[in-house]
Length: 289
Image (cartoon, rainbow, N blue to C red; front, side, top):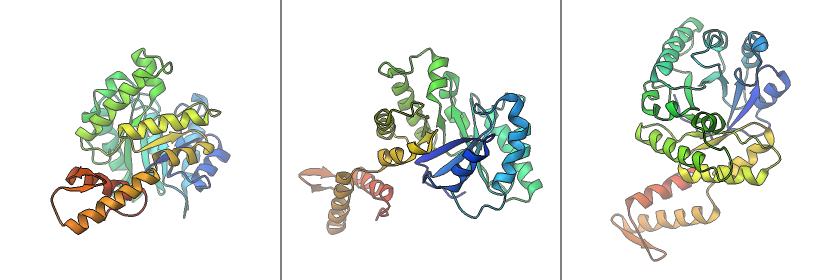
């Protein structure tokens, strides 16, 4: 599977066709759309919502990659969710409330069979486990058991509730959990995780602060619950102009020097700093040199 940048993943309830179509259209610039079958859909509405997804994905020729958040693998809905939604146009599955590697392994096994039955390439549908509990946080390494699972999602509100931490008032617990998750993903060889939704749609400043903190801690992107959040998230995850300018100077200096440690702006620069400069330019869309 080709890895793509996911700065923003825009949620839309699968039961609400207008919202789902807007997310899938790409009109708001999100890097991916997530059609939700879990929290945003009442139990009585889940059968109709899951049946609607293949219709929404059929014949798409543009727009962002389409993901579906199914119900938890421990729920009575997950099997029917997967059977209903696997088909052309599906980029990946978000697995909520994962606490064991076995949940990922089971989803991987079932997806393999469903891909074969649908005539799809083997392994083409990605998996994204979501860490929403304390047990989930300490099981990140086990979630890397499938090559489909290259990223982890973080659900801060559920995590705070499970861990008995205040979700606001300084957000010390959320900060700690973010740092732990980013390090665990790196240690497991996974891509940078995707951060939690920011529920206060009226607080643009709060969203910007949360997304900026996630970026500093090593996250790769953010979930969005409303189209108006996408631009703010992209701005938060974009390198600052001064970062880009310094990265250019570092690469130019290394190109002139050839190898070894050098000085740029009076500071010693070696290979790790060079790697970071390349990363910054990649994030800025300039390539890494």
